Length: 143
Image (cartoon, rainbow, N blue to C red; front, side, top):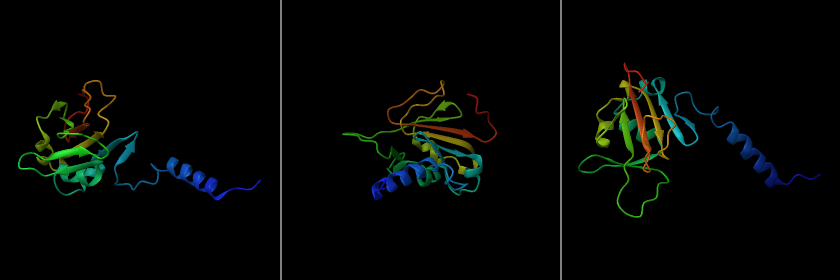
């Protein structure tokens, strides 16, 4: 039986896709099913605000404006207007995206980013524009 080069390439692609999570650097964000998670260990050594760290490590584009920054998840398609993900800090809904610029990344225990806007956490309402859950150090994550 003769193996074609495209079959070898397909097999290599499948094998590497299965190993993706293991090949991620220790300090890189965890990704599962489109969700991105940054935990305390990954955030502790990051300088700057939470927004800057998320911009560097998350699946999002940030556009500075005169007011609060506009956040759009990569791959989001809008025909008009802008999209703003729902943001929760310790279970409380944030009024705007400015809140992400108010915290140092080192003060955050965990961030969960859901570009799809859907989470299995029943206490958080889904959003078509995405969802960002922030849990600060010194607080319980059971909200």
